Image (tube, rainbow, N blue to C red; front, top):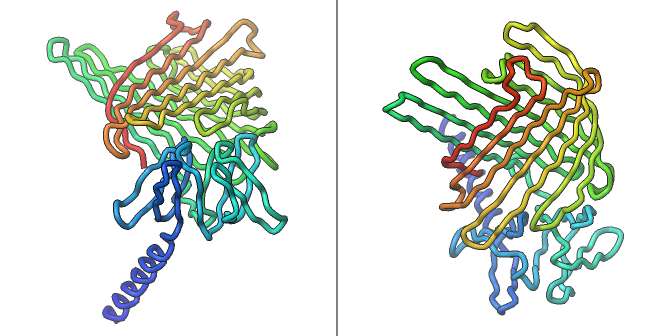
Length: 340
């Protein structure tokens, strides 16, 4: 029985390997005349990821590509928010894709393409996970600090989903302090994301410096992408959220707040790779007029080796009516990050 199971597993692995081998028939032609054969894994952030037999996985700068030949089906997202599904026609001129679907042919300039994914991609293939950690300790003052950051992103045809978590712990001879946050955002659209999209958001926070035991918030709104290219994105969201707060020595507090968000991301895909993510939220209170909170998160990262990054992260929380009298808290950390 065991022998039969092992034989079946070997057959499955052999079939998978054969399928992988036969899949590597996509041809990328560069403007300098070079031709590379392999399997298109994805294109985003201005880089086409191609799996080859000879040199493994390579990343090719998108503006350097003149032609793409492939017999498989793809999901394309354009800079105007349109999504196209189909296969590539070989009649395209340099700098152009001709996508064929049941409704006909669509001529697309290569630089209009923001993202490419094979339609056979699994859920796991669409997950983008980033982890970073930093630790510091000073013997003279006996001060230790540990920071952990995590972001998990998932995109499909009609939504983007993001989960971000942060935890900071500081230990001194006198006391320990900590702050943490978890936030979730889901943006959905009907046809393309260049038009208005619907947004759901929720968050959890705690901060010893601000006397905040917990803050749980959730709400909804609408947003729009103002910039959405293979080099950068800029989006904004406006909505309402309900908030429940628990403060040390002051009990609980419930409020309704405006939710105003601006998010910016940009990539530099030439070596060394570099990207920046900025997220700013403003929360003017509706039920407690005059109170305004804000959160700012900024991450800069440089690639040291494949999938390994040098990470600089900073966050700032403000509250002009904090019960502790401290109206802001912030941190700047640097450490090592890993991207799947």
